[in-house]
Amino acid sequence: MGRRPSRRRVLVAAAFTLRVIQVSFFGHADTAKAAVDVAPLPPITLAEKCGALLLLGATILIGLKPDLLLELIRPAPDALLPGRPERGAL
Image 1 (spheres, one colour):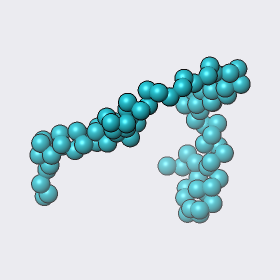
Image 2 (cartoon, helix red, strand yellow):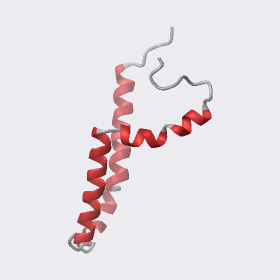
Image 3 (cartoon, helix red, strand yellow):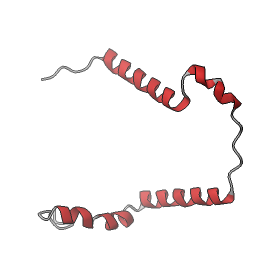
């Protein structure tokens, strides 16, 4: 049986992971001052709102009814695995 990691190691790994995520998204502390001088972004246009709404709607639809997408995907693994039993024959 292998040794289980100690709590201290898990906490150090979690802290390191959080620090890496923070630096990835927000940068180092010395570069944060330079980012203040960036011009503000223009308002979101109607086309951008419509595109975001389409993506959001498609994500919610596939999340609630994944069979719509799975029916398109299923032939590929069936072709790769010829010995795979038919659907519903578990």
